[in-house]
Image (cartoon, rainbow, N blue to C red; front, side, top):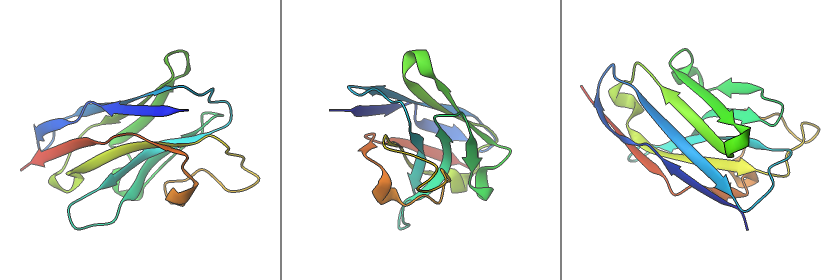
Length: 130
């Protein structure tokens, strides 16, 4: 049974940086679409950034140029480097993975249906103050 454990959330001032980590275990991630989703208070959870098993990345427009998704395959760990943070980035951030991904079915994008995700992290709270 696979498991994702995300960490690295915290509170910073506007303009600051944080890095989230997501450690994967219990499953051999061969073909996958993985990414970060966030849910702000009173809003639906939405995709932020994704990466596929070929290393292709895609970002929501609201974070382009500020956030960077990356992975360390040897460590089975996914990262989200968040720079130039804004108060509107305040949310609970979750990592997630579709471990049955194939581009023939859909393209790995932040708009991916969350129902396709097989595993979810526990969530990391990010709070940005102005």
